[in-house]
Amino acid sequence: MTVAQILGEGSIVFAVGLTVVFAILAFLILVIDINSKIVHAIEGKKKPTPLTSEPKEVVSQSIVSAETTDEEDEELVAVITAAVMAIFAGSNSSSDIRVKAIRRTGRTSPAWNVAGRDEYLATRL
Amino acid sequence: MNDFFSAIMDMINASGFMHLTVMHLVMIGVACLFLYLAIAKKFEPLLLLPIAFGMLAANLPLGGMMHPAFWELENLHAVQFADLFDSAKVGLLDILYMGVKLGIYPPLIFLGIGAMTDFGPLIANPKSLLLGAAAQLGIFVAFFGALFLGFTPQEAGSIAIIGGADGPTAIYTTTKLAPHLLGPIALAAYSYMALVPVIQPPIMKAFTTMKERTVRMEQLRVVSRTEKLLFPIVVTILVAFIIPDATPLVAMLMLGNLFRESGVVQRLSDTAQNALINIVTIFLGLTVGATASAEKLSQPGYGLKALYIILLGMAAFGFGTFGGIIFGKIMCWATKGKVNPLIGSAGVSAVPMAARVSQKVGQEYDPGNFLLMHAMGPNVAGVIGSAVAAGVLISMLGK
Image (cartoon, rainbow over all chains, first blue to last red; front, side):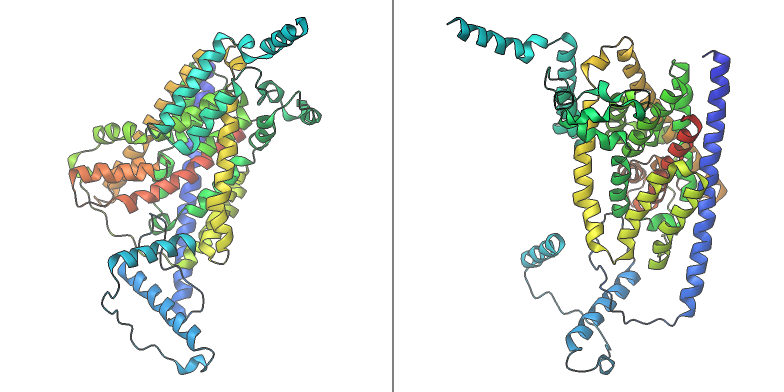
């Protein structure tokens, strides 16, 4: 290819390529914003209920999870409440059970036991 | 007695030693070098080790494991698929190579990557997508450079995509545009990905001021599960409509992410990010490495081409980092100091290495500055960005 051809074809690919990539990703920004607004509008209307029967992942393996304390607490409450409901579901109807407070007791197991249990949970379950 | 000796002579003649050429020795040496880099220096060993070993296996004379000439014809229609049943003509690696040639393995790896990726930081701060786009500058600069060095546009496109810092994307693009360069391009791509912590910091420091480097960013907002659930679905639909050639990569990436975020297919998510991606990595690495055969590399000019690819790869990474940093500076200025330009370099999508580099460099100047999560936004945006760029190159340059 001659230098002129190279400059010609190269510039076209350069310009079109960068423009298209930027345009598509900018469009995705718009889409995400609209997405988030719609989701917040819908979720704002629903009354917040702490009861959920889905198992939530309490221990997130990925390095990239951003957990604020609020999110962690909410998830923990949901899991503990679900576990309580599951245990008592047979004997009473679940509407008789209301979780009023969840308090952490002091560390009752030695650290090594806890670490071993955590590792088992993470890798085997 | 004569029979005995002639039988021995036959065996000696059939041995690899008789069919050894200098080029074979060179390739075996290079393969061992890359094995050393992968094992002792830990350069992206998950891929570099199979690639290096594939190169070794393909260059054992008469080993018969790989026949690149079988595959490298102008198009798939010319390949004599019926010969796959003839074990004299094809070996194990030829059969496994079908996954590369037919474009199956890279999208499957993206499936696993999507299942491992948390797009939360990106959704929380969608502007990171712009940094992911800016970092693809390296691709297009390298394209220019490759044209100047005498490569055809298709070859230049394949080399340029190294700048996307994304192994599967580079392999997918090269398979479609310039399959004969697959070996060197894959090696260059993965070697440079391993070198990100070495290549990026000087560029990051050279183009940012002290004030910019110490910017502390606001905590990311919490992203709801519904948002994370809708994201992959919406992105797949939109990108597929706008740039169809990027669909296999982006759709599989988002499917993997959907596996993860939906929470109802834990087994599938688990398989995708463990067993599946590991199996495909083994097959992909092995067969991609095997395409770097002595016969092909003895062709005149190939060694020079390989050298150029190495240089262009470096340029691609360098300019990608530069593009991300410069756009980061623009965003810092535009938001009046709310964005730390150092996260821009994470748009070079070597996940999560580039984000860790941003974190490390930021901490050099302000030990309490935790940029990692903020850098993950551009980092994963870069994966999408490089897949889109690949789609653009394939659609503009493909036949």
